[in-house]
Image (cartoon, rainbow, N blue to C red; front, side, top):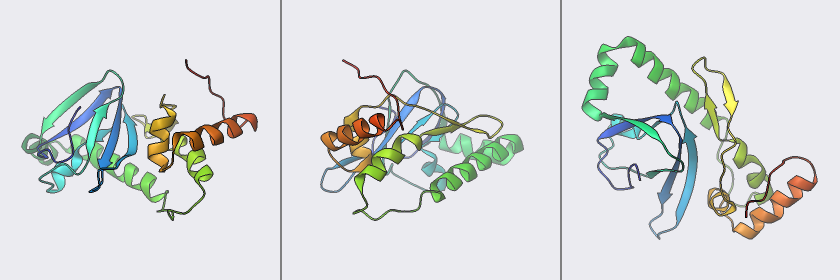
Length: 173
């Protein structure tokens, strides 16, 4: 666990290596995976925007190397180090563009569209800003949480996509 929902928002984390799962828990206790991020990404940057408490959780999915930067130290560095400030702003803008490219979808939209699109949302950006697709190893249970359905529906659509030649995957035992 990197940080949990409700923890003090007192630092930013830079992922140097590994994959991190971002989740939120609703008021009724339902957990939802909202994203998977990998090296070259930041997590917890809401602390810099005045967040006092974490609005979600971040947990390592793989072995990770993280750089933890205290909120005050990050703010000071952003003011003093123009190269870091430029890099951080570029990161935030690129993330914002990616998110805007996925406008909110009605909850009743067909799950097959969600199951088919979610695995390809996980992208990372190289230092030169060029996107590269990341194929994270995630379980059907996790994918079901991300989509808002049950594992058997994910399995049904994944098998259909595989038979149609849209995806290729190996079943794990």
